[in-house]
Amino acid sequence: MLPLISTIFIIISAIFVAIGWFVIAKGNKELHKKMMFLGALFAIVFFITYVWKTVFIGSTAFGGPEEIKLYYTIFLIFHITLATTAAVLGIIALISGYKNNLKLHRKLGPITSIIWFFSASSGVAVYYLLYVKYPPGEVTNVFRAIWGF
Image (cartoon, rainbow, N blue to C red):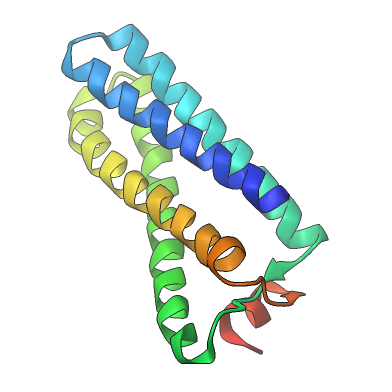
């Protein structure tokens, strides 16, 4: 149940970021700040639930067919790279926005949002592959779940 809940949090985060992007294009700075704050808040809640599950329960290994496991692993690494990049850039974008460093914020914000959308989308795909399309694999430590050792 926890993976579904955390996936819902990341979807909500992406929706708030999309709304924030839309309203800033219309010139509504105050609503933009609120939407991006909520997007960040739901991303943090996602991260906390994800880390909690990983530390206290474990990570779910891929349970699908062995012939596509390599493709899944490559996709998962792509997702992890996007998520990490989006998180770092997101923190910088939020700080630059709140400190009114608009030159940096305007340059970084759209790039960060695009990466975040790909990260959120690929995260939903990872959830789908791990829990919906195929039966979940064993619950183990994160390294064994990703790399098999």
